[in-house]
Length: 207
Image 1 (cartoon, rainbow, N blue to C red):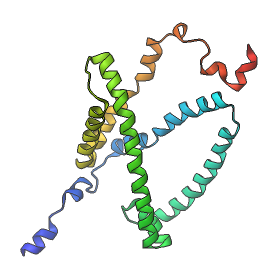
Image 2 (cartoon, one colour; image 1 turned 135 degrees about the vertical axis):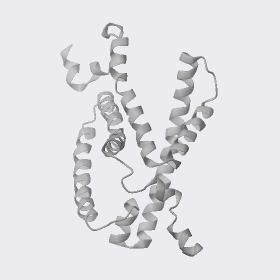
Image 3 (cartoon, rainbow, N blue to C red; image 1 turned 180 degrees about the horizontal axis):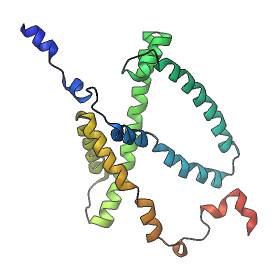
Image 4 (cartoon, rainbow, N blue to C red; image 1 turned 45 degrees about the vertical axis):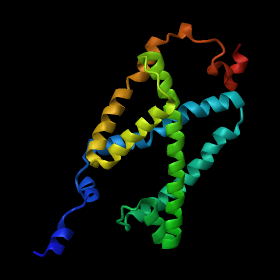
C-alpha cells in the first residue's frame, strides 16, 4: 500500500469524533433534552411578560409560531428521507434553492449563533461571578468566568461526541433536583407579597 493510500485511509480527528455508532440512546436523549432546554426559559419568561404587560398578542403569537413550525417540520421531515448529509440546514437549503443560497444561509446561521454565544457568555459571566463571590468567597472579574465557560465549551467541542454526551447527561441529571431544593429552601411564607401571580390578568379581580 502506497503512502498516499495510507494517508487517505487514516481517519481524521473529526471522523473519529463523529464515528458511526459513537452515540448510544442515552447520549442522544440527553442531546435532545438539552436542545429543548430553551423551552424552560420560555415557560418562565413568557407568563411573566404576559403578567406584566397584559398584552393578548403574546399568547396569540404562539399560534402563529406553531403554524410556521408545523409547515417547516413537514418539509424538513420529507427532505430527510432523501438527503444524507451532515451539513445541517446548509444541505437542505442547497438541495432546494442552490449552493449559493445554501452558503448564504449557513453564513447567516453562523453569524446568529456567534451573537448568541456572545450573549450567553455575557450572561454567564456576571451571574457566576456574583454566585462565586456570595457563596464561595471567590472574587474575580466577570470576564474571567466568561472565559472559563468558553474554554470548557471549546474543550468539550473538540472531544469525541460521546464524551460530550456523557458530560451533558451528568449536568442534566444534576440540575433536575434544583427546583425541588429551591422550593424547600424558600418557603411560601417568605415570598414577597405582590408576586407575579398576583398581577396575572385572571387574578386581579380575585382580591
